[in-house]
Image (cartoon, rainbow, N blue to C red; front, side, top):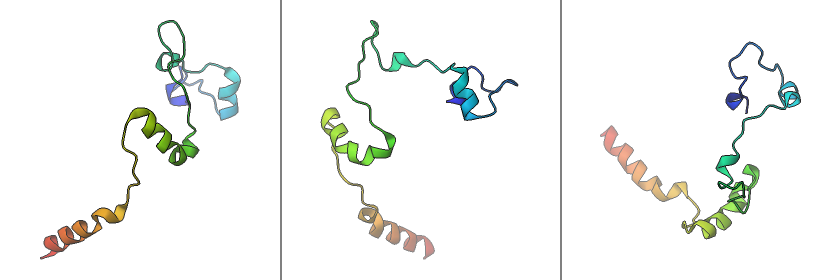
Length: 87
């Protein structure tokens, strides 16, 4: 938040998070979530901490295929590629 605040990189930057909050001057980004009339254009806000549990819901709403990414799917090709590099 501080990075986007009007105080970023100024000598009068707040020294602590509490000081930053006490000032009450935050970046305004409502245009990302509202239309021209100020009405919300989003229907749900997901917490980052729960993003894994939220992905199936997001996939259904966006039409994006939801599948678990498995690192081992490409493990054989990676090992083969590395073996070729060593030869």
